[in-house]
Amino acid sequence: MKQRPKARTVIPVRRMRRGSRSVAELRRRVHAIGARYATDHPLQEHMDPSSYINSLWHSFYTSKEIGPISEGQYLSISRAFLAGYSEKMGMPTPNLVLVPTRKTIGAVVTVSNEEKTIARVLNELQRLPLQELIVVINGSTDNSVHIARQCPQATIVHYPSLVGHDVGRSIGAKLSSSDMMLFLDGDIPIQTEQLVPFIRAIDGGWDIALNDISPYIGLFAHRDGVSIVKQFVNRVQGRPELQANSMTAIPHMLSRKALEVIGSAALAVPPKAQAKAIRNGLRICAPASIDVVTSNKPTRFNTGTANPVSNLIVGDHLEALHMLLGEHGSRLQFKDAHRTRTALAGGSV
Image (cartoon, rainbow, N blue to C red):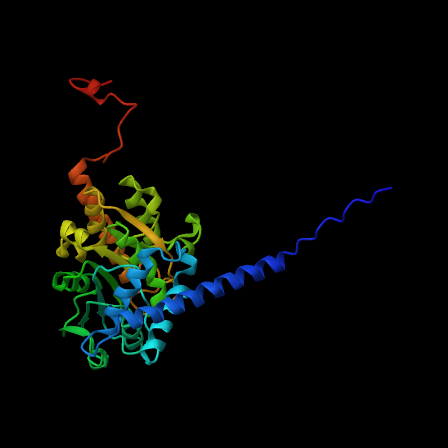
């Protein structure tokens, strides 16, 4: 009797190993390409390494020489390019994060008594090819000003009195000229790699990129008043997909078009600025989630029920809602489909 051939056993581990070797081979290829770019386009002494190498990376990235690079591969492949370029130039590999854009990037950081964290915030930002870095220090009584001045790239705007984070962002935006602006606070250091999705979104045509805080605020039934009012204001504007995401939270990024349409002064009340953006048809997305909820340092201003910070944020959203009611009427865009109120004219029903 003829025996059947034995079925071949497929071992998933082997497939994973082949995939791993494929990624390693891709990195080797890109490393060699980085070295080739160094030969063809060497860094000169008068050049800014960050912006110049990033422009070369972007040329390669958009050339599709090795095919499309997925978001999951992006950081690993860009590091291989940077390492290959640097080694060929005979210099240490700089601690940079290469970004998928040639548009100019700026950042605004607001600071008030952040001497324990501001250095880390600025050090991370300097890993980007920034055109400008504006630090608005207000009401600080600690060493924040001195520490910020150690950053050679930073433009320091110092207000002895407290103006608030939102007004600080508005001031920084007014002084800016970059194609896209990133907004951060001086009390929450964020790893540079986490900011790449925001840059990718604005480069791809979105006008505003918000931080998706949805994973960190739990189920709706257990949320605080701040999260509820954020979501409510988005929903009444017909944007339920934005959930509780708001320009109140950092990080967020705006295109130059968004800044021109909204106006820098409007950023002083972030929910009103966001409502204005929606009204003008600007494209808004939330491309990544960064935990700024649990990492936000507790103070006497932001802890406890109805604390000053939560009251301020709720008030800002109510101000935005008041603006919308004034523009669209008491029912906004929601039609009164089941009542004929004109029947009440001239008598009672």
